[in-house]
Length: 154
Image 1 (cartoon, rainbow, N blue to C red):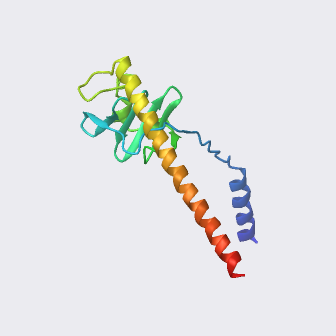
Image 2: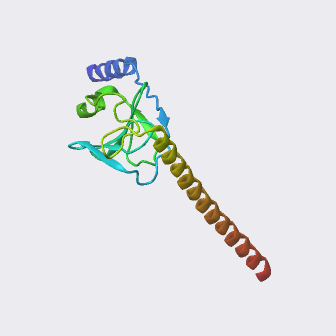
Image 3: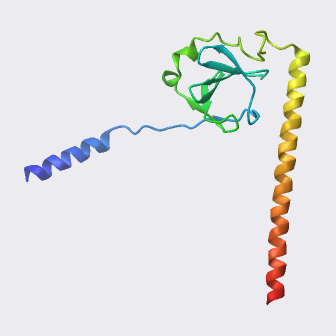
């Protein structure tokens, strides 16, 4: 009987614990597949010429925004919000805003250069979308061809 009462008490106690809710905030940055990286200090690189501060550190891409830090394994993935205590100290110590539009020669890009880089990225994304649509079209054509062949066999 004591064993049952103890088990019941444990279940009641565990049921009363507050549940932790997780909010998943994600952002997309539109980085290229292989963004150009510049070493700014040992173990930390920054994406060159990008309008936001995006760092590469220990296998993760990190983005600092006013709402906090976001990270992703790949530059094309969605960046997930990360609690401040999980952000590496080396990144937190980087002066905020210093590496926005950064260049390999160690200075921020000028407006003209920023515009040119933005236009290059736009062209790259447009070409990627064009290739994806062309591949989708080929897949659609193949399915239509397979359906026609199947109808002829009947």
